[in-house]
Length: 381
Image 1 (cartoon, rainbow, N blue to C red):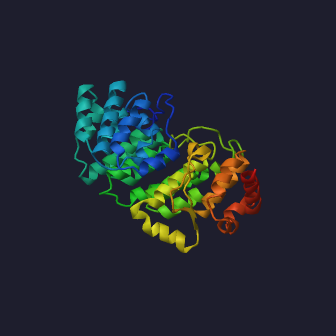
Image 2: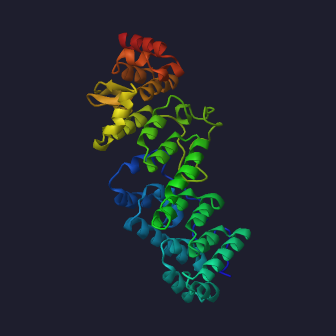
Image 3: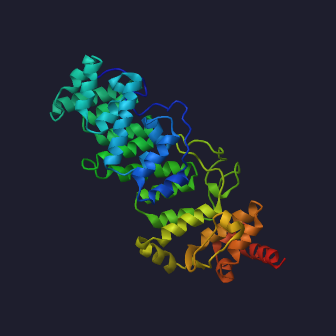
């Protein structure tokens, strides 16, 4: 046997003591574009109550912090914080074993005289008999609803895929599953992509979170799909808060996602999507992405903006900026539907009328002709 512990034992199943996430799926998308992720983590953590794993999860670190020293240091600090709070080695076992620090976990067992777990850890898990024993313990712990510790024992048995699956499904913590996949990329090189493709992406689609869908595609190296998702003329965040989503049921305003612990966006801000997609398309490495959209006739040139309400709302474009037609038309529709026709007009007057009239996106909601005529009337007055 390998020690006791509750259903959340192992360092990955606790709920964070009521910690409220200050980070949304849109924030995660922006952070993924940053080259300064480690400093950003230090800026984010003061917003949380501590440096435990729930605090890291609340700022989305499991999704955007890459494999490397910063991730390892953050997880080790979380493991130490968990032990300090509980004085139970099994409570932090999953994090220590994910880091490959079995020796550190054994030392904690000696500190609190946990001879049962410490004695089991002393075995050589390169030997098949002890790997088999660890896996049997893992299944036994699963039957006892001790999911975090079960995942830890799967790691002892070198079954990284099973450990990640327990984190994503039984613990409902897809961020922790992704972190384990990152840390064990050498042993399981395809696991990261499998978790994102088969766990995170379907969940994001079921939750109708367009930003989380885009994050999934970015993690999978599919920026074109991310742009298409955020440029779509429909989707949850194009609807007013509380409206029924075309991709799912009515959404809970500003709630926390049960599987990622991220804050849900409740409404669509046109400027945010325009700014993000523009930044993504403007990157020097995005030339193939721009060409793919241009080849399909999906890009429109946006004239430069200056001053006024559109600056305050973030709907700005540089001279010659190219943005997807569906995104521009959906922004116009959303602005008019939310009672901001002046904002719609500010976008309309910067995009060639033929581009708007030829776009399926504008016709999907109010109709491009109606939007254009209303905006033109406002400009004339």
